[in-house]
Amino acid sequence: MNKKLLFLLMFVLSLVFILAACSDSTSEDADSGDADSAETGDAGEDASITYAIDQAPEGLFIDGFAGSAIDSKINDIIHVDMVTTNEEMEYIPNLADWETDDNQEFTFTLEEGVHWHNGEELTMEDWEFAIEVIADPDYEGPRFNYVQDIEGAEEYRDGEADEVSGFEVVDDYTAVITFNEPKVNNLENVWTTPMPKAELEDIPVGDMEEAPEVRENPVGLGPFQVTDIVEGESITLERFDDYWEGKPKLAEMQIRIIDPSLNLGALQNGEVDIMEIRPDDIAELEGLDHVRVEEQAGLGYSYIGFRMGHYDEDEGSAVDDYDKYDSKELRQAMFHAIDRQSIIDSYLAGTANIVNTPVPSVHWIVADESELTQYDYDPERAEQLLEEAGYVDTNDDGYREDPDGNEFVVNFSHFAGSSAFEGRAQALMQAWEDVGLKTELVTGQLIEFNTFNDMKENDDDNIEVFFGSWSVGDDPDPSGLWHSTAEWNYGRWVNEESDELLDEGLSEASFDEDYRADVYAEWQKLFNDELPGLPLWENVDLYGINNQLEGVTIDAVGLRDFHEWYVTEE
Image (cartoon, rainbow, N blue to C red; front, side):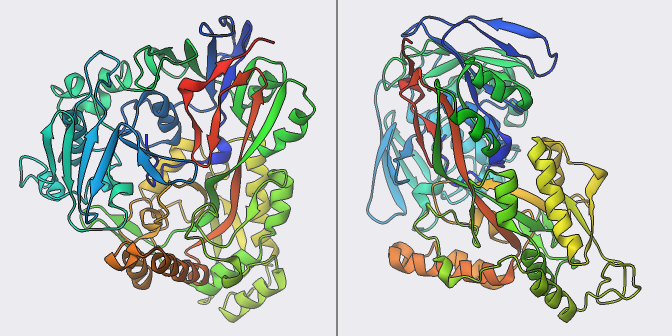
């Protein structure tokens, strides 16, 4: 689907994607440890490949319900958007073209003759259906923010209207969307992935997430269609010959869940064609004749988050009612205590880039680092800031108490993954210990990925200081992660000036790109000073690719053009 500031919980370094090789191959099953043979076809149209992931998806294979990065990557192959982006992350027509005179009312014209996997022709009613599902009062998915700006969507969700008035189907191939106001990013933030109305319309919206039509036999528009799902093990995708951009060049993809410890060996042994690799894999792969390593500046960054409150679902806003980390000097000291370059060198093979803003450098709004405070590794400065803020060791136990003389413990949490994650977590904890801040790992160990996400979403009391990673979308607006109304503002930061600047970045005045860039630069300066989170580094997307796999397009958004992938003869 269109990334559109997905804010999906994309933990870039925790995901690995593998495609099995062109000859007979064997893959290890992550759950049982037994070897299963997966015979592949010959090079050309009969080629069958295996696309493996190292964590089980939630199993929500209709876009609009999925909230995890893993499900979304699978859905990218099954589904298609009305609009998309090019390599410069500019919005361009895909299934539909559009016209607008005022950025408030848009007329969309649909490509004719596009078919669903069930043979039904795509019409504007399928798009309208998706909008109304997401705006339905019984919808429990994470995407309402992509329809809330359409005229009448709020009223529909509140049960005050029987339709979303701002979505008008003119005919099968024409629709008019009217937004509440002419925001500069209305197009970027509207939901553009249709749902198969014929398959889903008889299912109550509240039951859709658990329905077989979503979890077992989803129908999409993409180059590959689902033919079999074995929960926790595999998803088999078969070529959709009637794909609107042309018949895909591969016959089949099998998505399999494989233990991350087995991935690198599979690529080394020639059992896979492509996978997203971790930095510490590079050295071993660069010496292989049959594998190339590709790097791509991406949209992901890692940061340290601080709990500052909780999210009030009824009010739709964060509430700043947790004051343990209110001291800006404390947060600045914790930043100066971290030797980021050392961690990058030790646990990311030197591939990440230090940043001091939560805006990826590929976005045109990114502030110049020269305008931002550089929180260089400076433990002496960290200790000075702590002393000035009243965090001193009052009982000579080697650890600092809080300004009221009470014991102060940094409760830190990090999601589980590769062995590098354990080392990274320990390095961060040691950095704070070295400046006198007692630090403990919540639960005593790294937390399972989905459990970790649930804890953040539910404002679990154990979540205080946490390691996080985001892969943002092609729309540069940071509101979805840092505005006080954003559900994905997991630190629950509330700052009036921040909200005002983020709102101004979407105002009518911000139709002037230079003005908008200046507004976002001011916001980044504010963030850089207040530090509601500590931007650590931006990640470089890394792929190991078997030289027999061709036609793969990689850009900042990730892998794309799956219908163009093909296998060559040795």
